[in-house]
Length: 149
Image (cartoon, rainbow, N blue to C red; front, top):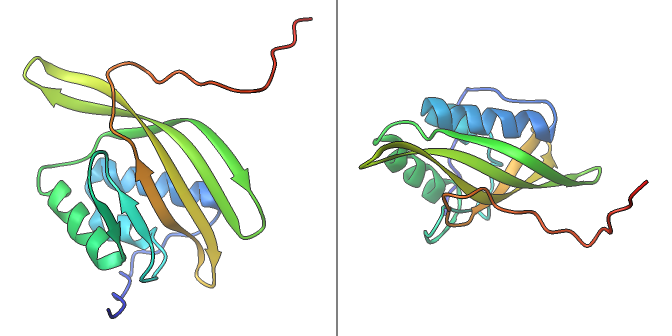
């Protein structure tokens, strides 16, 4: 499979900056900005809630283009937990998503993992994996014992 030429939309900075640009692009249905967040590699991967594994920038672009044909994706990252190194950053994110239902606009929550690598073009997303959502905010469990003072 040949590589897809990146758009002229420039994004840069830290992994946090790429993550902010990614969610902003979803909220505005800006396909070019969203694709500029991804590494230009054939093995990048994306899994939408309940969807198949999408491998490569072409498959990811086609999927987001189809999603954006229905409008914006109103999702905000919250409760970000990060594991960082010099060349990679893994973000476990609780996404608050606005969903239009028969009863009107509702909020739902999705747990996602976003993986970023530092590439020659700067930090870029290499994986986005989102779980099916729920109407309740996901509870966080930790092995860290609570210390009372």
